[in-house]
Length: 113
Length: 113
Image 1 (cartoon, rainbow over the protein chains, first blue to last red):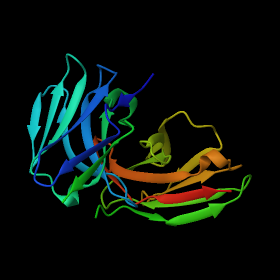
Image 2: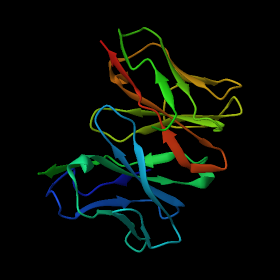
Image 3: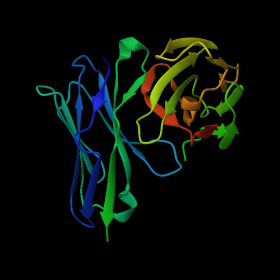
Image 4: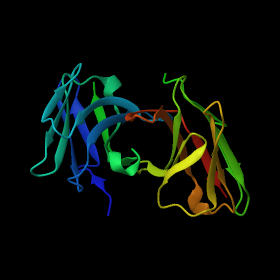
């Protein structure tokens, strides 16, 4: 069935450390992957995306890595800050399925000051 | 902020009742997708509307229905509410040609008693 899963439900890091959030996906035909951040009481907020023909993409303090061989996606956050505390979701898109997003369960990131 | 608005923010209903949730798209976006997010879970795709017609549907029963209006705003209707319908309902707007750029609203929290 459709699924995008996450390895760890919670992650606790010290402020200033780097964070790595992992995601496993099941459909090798996925065209696009997106990381979302969801703070309490808010909708998911776009962080960074990557096309299936790429291995790595960098943004401001965030990097997404895609390993298609093992169907694994990761989000790296550099110098994690308290404001980074939230639930992080990976999602995939299949363009031939109308562009619906398929989300995983999420990882809750907690940043200790 | 994404420019996507939803109303109401919170709603309490009883089993068997009907509910209508509303979403206003970000300016310029012609596609609206609805997602259901149960507590502690990732959002699940309900359906998508483009040009006022349903353009893809997830694994939800027919009592979940929707509308899209000429101004691209949208409604989600749920009939015969069940306890398991309690969730955060999210809408996301996008351009049909760029489904990867889905911007989410803050959601409507529905509680069914």
